[in-house]
Amino acid sequence: MSSDARLSNRQRGDRFGQRTGTFSGQNGPNNQQPGGDSTGAHQYGKVSRGKSEYQGYKKARELRGTKVPGSGFNMLSNSLECQMTWEDMNLNTNITARIAKAGLDNPSNVQKLIMKPFMQGKDVIAQSQSQYDRTCTLAIALLQKLSPSASTHKHCQVLVVCSEGVKPQQVHEDFQSWFEATPELGAVLLSPGETAVRTILSDPDQAKQVVLTTLGPLMEALRSNLLDINDIKTVVFSMQEAELVELQPFKQLWALLTKDTQVILMTGRITQQIQEVKSHHFRDDTAVRRADELTLQWSEHYYVGIPSSDRHQRHKAHGDHRVGENMDEAEPAPKDRKWEVLMEILTKNPDISHTVILTQSQSQTQALTSKLKARQFNVVSVWSMADRVEVTHQFNRPDPCIIVSESTLMDCDLDYSSLVINYDMPMNATCYITSFGPFGRSGLRTLMINFCVMDDSAQRQTLEAIKSMYDISILEMERD
Image (cartoon, rainbow, N blue to C red; front, side, top):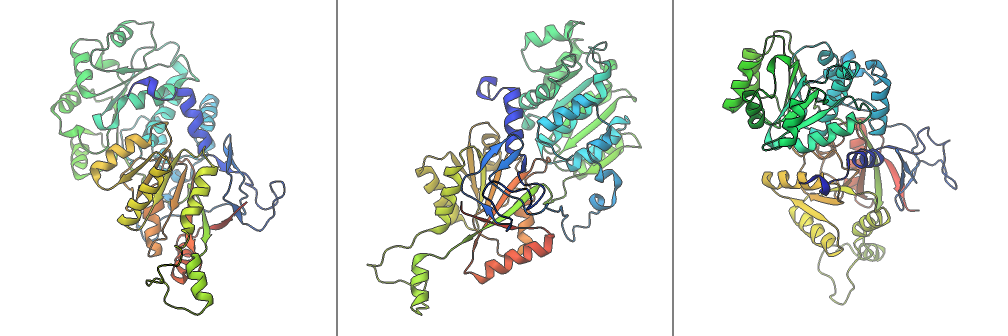
């Protein structure tokens, strides 16, 4: 994708920061909107978003974070390292200002886990399925590490080697956005046939402390002496899976690295193959961090009480228990209350640009997709793993987009989702974490709304079970 097809770096950072802020009314019922009350109910009509806040909502109390029950992964609750805040990291003031601009209220799990060993110069292997999270983590760490000497040391000191699936062009754009507060620090994208970049690499006065590339152009630059491997202090490998470690150029590059070079490997999964690479090529004190435990701590959870259809109400009032059977053909079709609520949310909040709608059946996914397309929404459906790759790329563009899916989106990097709607309540509470847990992994907050049919006792019981199981508050939203 050309750079013209994307937002500028400044626009992109501001835009996603605005969509992922916190709700107004952070201090509870006493912080009311004009004309509001303190009942804890929330309005789902017009959601006016300002810088780093959701106006039009009143938060009754702070949402408590949670970890997955029975996960057997206690790192987040027991490790002091994982309880760090941005203040605990002692970052430079220009970095904390940039973090605030990006809307990152708190460090993500991977940021808490790898920042300390990264700054200590240790080798690090980190698992994070979110590419945006990996990019933010690297940018923050490199800003802290390189900024003090940026004006005097302009040569390449850090290589960020991406696999093709990671899309180095997008990573480069994100790095430039993060580095804009430190103009002495330069991030250069090395790609095939880029003569301008070669000129920058050859010019000692040009800032190029960080070079982002893929294996092919990197090996060519090393053979052409455009880069001196002895000047490289840190090499970062960023990949979705273990695709780099299978390639011959990867092994050739590894053989060129000195024993003092810090190596950071960031990947979607720490596989057995990567464990073998660690035992052969990484230093003994390598820090291994699995930071992608599913958690609900980055989300605000609400439900909308959906009334039963008109037909259901009429027959219930007359004692007719044949609801759902074929009735008189002359009887008008019942209103689809869930569809009405969905349309009210989407049409009254056009600034909520990236939405995910989760269903419980393929037929519901197909029906919703067709109806949304008929209303001229930009909507895509997820059916297979092949779909997920293309859908992820489309969703993470600046253009508004809606995803409808009946399956969990565990392997999709959808950090820019500002709204996730559970159109159908899950069959049981244990499904809730797999539905909502993957969102907000990078520390950006996401609004979660559950549609609950209030006359359905099973759905009400599931809602209460979710609150109890994950120790979270799910407050009601009501119409304006």
